[in-house]
Structures are given as structure tokens and as C-alpha cells.
Length: 401
Image 1: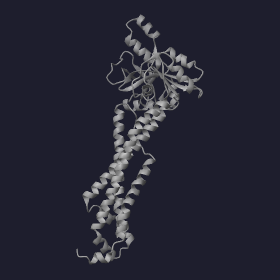
Image 2 (image 1 turned 90 degrees about the vertical axis):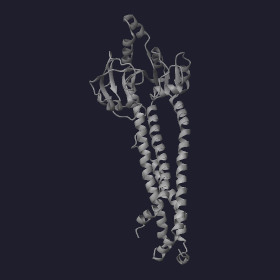
Image 3 (image 1 turned 30 degrees about the vertical axis):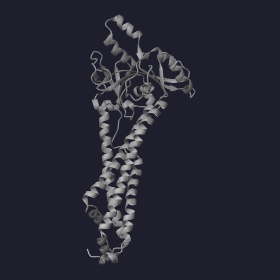
């Protein structure tokens, strides 16, 4: 007796019921896989972007906005701070490293960031080709920027004013590509990096009407944000308080603000995860009811199989085989749909120059999801299989059909 083939035919003998059960299991698995893959990648990306940054300092405003703009480059900054603030922070004995960031321009939606080579050291990213900028208007491209735009060392481009796609191009001060970075799966992948002097030169050239204006602009030079690394744990207690006491400065601790962000996002994720579990449970109950009715409807057929020599355990395997077929099909469709949705979301975010998500990403938690679906199918099949084993063959064969 070919039990898998017979279980398959029994399963699709009632196609509408089988399709409903399959749809419920697929939706539950897809929702769970989607949440697991997206959550894992977002968490890994955010943790990677926060590595080595103890404090973000910028203009007065929202601390969360400072983190989103200065670390993740997902928001607009709160403003600019005087260049003298960089020297003040570097003079602090509790500060090990200050990485200035100057924002304001972009390249086809990718942000141009004026900074120092310490920014690369912060993320321990190596060059894939070329060299680091050593003069104004030299640029190094992140991996995603280089791949999408196709720019290579030696080529030139003009930045656009603003952080969007529709800003006015600074054609008079083009950048020269001198290198591009290895892929790091971090925020640097989607940035164009250059010297802070480059950002100043571009905007001073665009705004100055004469030499006098140019001198005034040079005296009023500013940076947008500063990324701070502490020299000792004592700085976490005293330095933010000192920064916030300054008239033009605001401190934001990435650890605190990211925890707030995760709590805000976590509520919605927990609700969606609960909904996915509910779908799986409803699917399990539906499979149980369908198998129970199937056993009741097929009692004469099962009794005939017993009379022809089939032992009770084969009948139990037959009923369990239907549930396992549903589990296999639901898992295959659910995994494909979950990773497909992740890929689509990644394409949408890539178009917006946001976080990188990949549909091919797998998480260890998905193994537990697979085990859980098979376990749910076996539990749903347990009582119907027991009923099939306990059939009264003599009574059923004597009952007229």
C-alpha cells in the first residue's frame, strides 16, 4: 500500500476543504517568516550601525531625530552647530574620538556626507578599490552606491542640494570618485563620503557673491553632527550633561534612544506576531476538524481496508499523512511567500535609499517555525488517527450503505 500516494488522494478528495486549510497554514507561516526575517535584518543592521558610537551631538532638538539623522541617515538633522564645538569636544579628556559629519547634499537620493577617515575606522570598513579622499571634492562611494550608479575611480559627478532627489545640482563644483568601499551591510553602503572641506567648498561657492562673502562664510563654518566615542565609562555620566548645558548643543545617547525605538516598534511587531500565531492555531483547528470529518465519512472505506489486511497503525499513518501533506505544502508556500514579501519590501526600501533587506536571508528561528508547523499538524491528526484505529470493523461492514 502506497501510503503517501493514498494520503495525497484522500487529501484532495475534498479540494475546497484542503485549499482552505492550506491557505490558513500558508498565511500563518508567511506572516511569521516575514516578521522573523525582517526583524532579524533590521535588528542586525541597527546594531551594526550603532557599533562604536557612544554619543551623538548636534543642534538643539529631538534626541531621537539626532540618532535617526546622524547614525542611520533616515531623517533630516535638527540643524548645524559651530565648528568651534568640534574643537571643544576634542579637548575633553573623557572623549577618545570625535567624528564630524556635514550633511546637506545628495547624489540621486544617496546622501553626501562630509567627514573624516575616522568614520571608516568606526565601522572597520576597507576599500574595495582606489584610495581614501585626501583633498576637497574627492569622494569615496559606499558599496550600494557604486553598484547602482556604476561610478568608478576617476569619474566625476555633481551633487544636488538637499537630501532628496530633486535638488538643484552643483554643476560648478563636481566631485571626483577616488575609491569605493567593500560591502559592510551597514549605513556606509548607501553613503557618498568626502572631506568636510568639500561640503564647505560646494556651499560657499554656491552662496558667495564676491570675495567678501566668501570670507564671511569661511568664518561661519559649521558641521551638522558629531559622533563621539568615550575614553572611559565615566564619560557616560558627565559628558551628556555637559553637552546639554551648552547653548547650541544637544546630546543623544544611541543606547537610550535605540532602546526607545525598539520598544515603540516592538509593540507593533508583537501584535503582528500574535496574529501570525493565531492564524497558525486556526489552521491547526481547521485541519483537526477536516480530518475528523474525513475519518467519519470514510469509515466504511477504512473498515474495508482493515478487512483486506491493513493493520490499525497503517490507518493511523494514513490520517497522519494527510496532515503532513498539508504541513509540507503550507510550509513550502509560506516560506516562499514570506521571503518573497521580504524581498519586495527590500526593493521598496532600496528605492527610498533606506535600510537594506534581502529575501534570501534565513534565520535560525525559522527552523522552530518549521518544527512547530509539523508538530501542529501531528497534534491535529492525533485524535482523528485514534478514531481510525478504534473503528468497529464488524459493525461497519454489517451496516448497509
